[in-house]
Length: 290
Image (cartoon, rainbow, N blue to C red; front, top):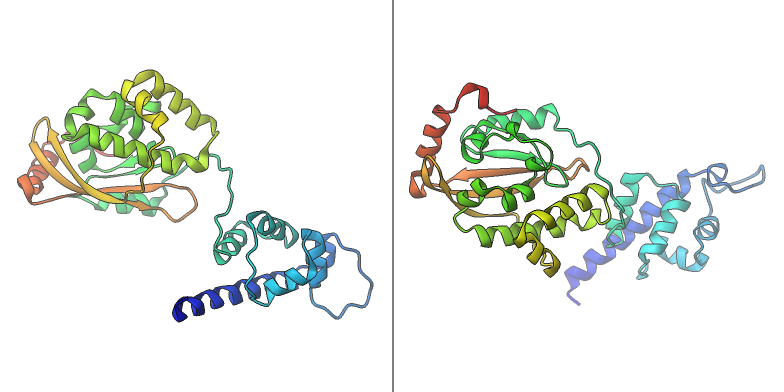
């Protein structure tokens, strides 16, 4: 093995052990539900006590704290999280240090676009942009997005969802020059991102609706294609401005909400920047962003 990789792996294991030890030493026996005598020299829990509560061997747990080359399973890490009473941030940190994916059965919360994100969205004057929630519902958008994609404020419920729009809105289908290619890629990205919400009622309802509403969705969804795509180009056929080309990028909002900021940057190709300026100048005030 490459020496630099070995060194990085050693450092990660040592950090994992140090983190476990720090959490163990701060946890009192009473909090962990362990009876103990009045005299106790060890701060927090002993290693054997953590091992007992987590249901693992004391020697094995000791090796883990010592940074030895032991590889805890997801189940063991979950048990350690419970034994050490870790909060959500600490659990995520532990799984990251262990090189494991934290198992999550996630549900969609009430995603809210806060002021700073709204201000940044509105500052993108010549870049159509919108914020989507974990189910890809459009939550906020700017004036440039209205000029290119239409007024999301006129849509309600599922109609304001990206997947719903791509597969059921004839105007969106006409707008996208390479509709089938983009629709397939969009669906594959949606499937990849929705895996963490498998079984969620809102996701299942949307998927059932799309199965009824779109023959292409009905054909492609069972194929289970997945893709992770952050950027690319889109060629549009705007009903007023004509041919336009944009580069798009998806940016994750790092607040645990699974919201994303989608930004389209007009390219010099097909005079897209000038065309966007003209569309913005002609945009009625009452149809501007929300």
